[in-house]
Length: 114
Length: 108
Image (cartoon, rainbow over all chains, first blue to last red; front, top):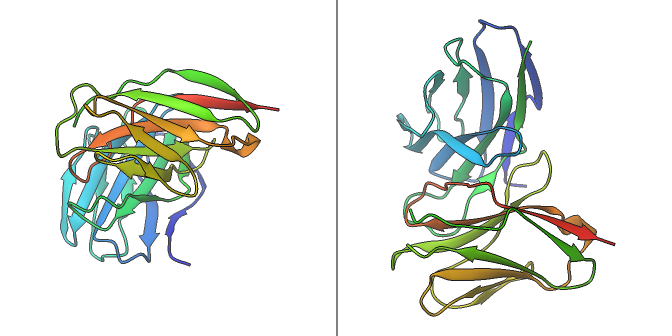
């Protein structure tokens, strides 16, 4: 079945360490996104990518980095510069710009800094 | 993107219709109205979207007012599994912006 796979589901990180969250899709979607969700709040856009080898900052990109070397993959690195990294991270994909057909989300990665 | 306003929470009886309102008074002519829902600790799930006309699918109906300043999502026969946070989004490009949404609790 087509979809988005995020791994791991739960992740623990020591303060000061970088950590990379995986996101893979087999939907042949051009665009991919990373969102962050804090308890009781909506989703905030971190980074997005419309095509391979290109990506743009979202609303809260500071302390995060991404790469898009393959159409299927859009990993997110949470760096030590991110002040409050503990959150629920969601990856999504869509067919691309101008397509009103909706987005597909992964099941999320819950990151906890210990 | 137009800002949307939703009530923070609402209750619904199981088996009854749930009507979720959304105001989007600053919506422009080419902005679609999308609805998603998020069940606890999962990724959001697409429900329905529309531009001008009312829409219906297997999950819900979307009623958009003629002036497009507001819309209503209708879950025709709410079940306990419909308990979730529901997000109304006005979108004219590919970047979804999620507010706090409406927490819907379906009670037996």
